[in-house]
Image (cartoon, rainbow, N blue to C red; front, top):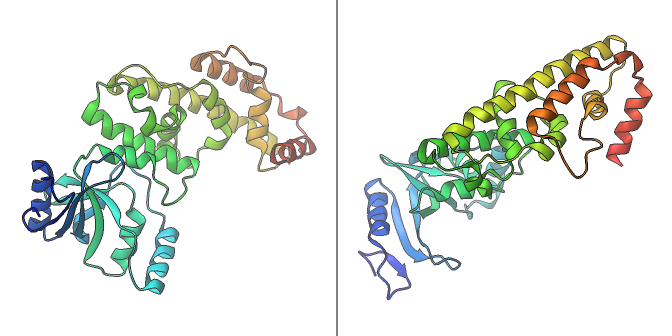
Length: 301
């Protein structure tokens, strides 16, 4: 036993920082129930009840989905018990962040619970890795991109000298960074239409995050310029009475400079210069509704 807390393995004294964190939990009005080594990497963790009011989502993750939180609340009410602890890390000054349990936290909040069962991890940097593995609610492209760019800024403040490549696991794919900047500026941005092109030419940058961020803004600007020209083309097509949900994707597919590229690809900058130029030359008068509908069916099949 260590200071009255259950420990496992019982013959091993937990590290000092883990003991200090358990003491902090008690000082914050919670309860450290057990200090233990998790079974995979043998890292020390704390199973604890934390005051719900002191637990917040990390500032980097996606926004709360109210329908999903409401569904969770109804399930918890029906079961009449909470059986799925969240992960948390200490955030200083009597605060804790959960990188993967915000919907469960919100559901408990609505149910007026005072405490939330948690697996408390001493290493705060693990929160970024957990965000990358977050499967509580499936991400769509916009949610994932916004989460990645928020995570990027958080890491930039803490470890701005490290390259994007060093955080490839956390970011998952480089185009999420670029799209995150675009979605922040234009929430209804057509990310799904541009994603196939970005996936092929966007790469993680070797510069430190602090310097790479400016390059990311430049890349987002190039995509935004292409999108502005695309919007004009789509408006001209619609003025002819041709309307279809797939029209943006259709025009981009016709102008995509990568359509014939197989072995060697142009750079990001070259790709979007060529794409923008092709969009500027695009003739809406040649487009027929049946062409768009046929292409949409081909993609879906």
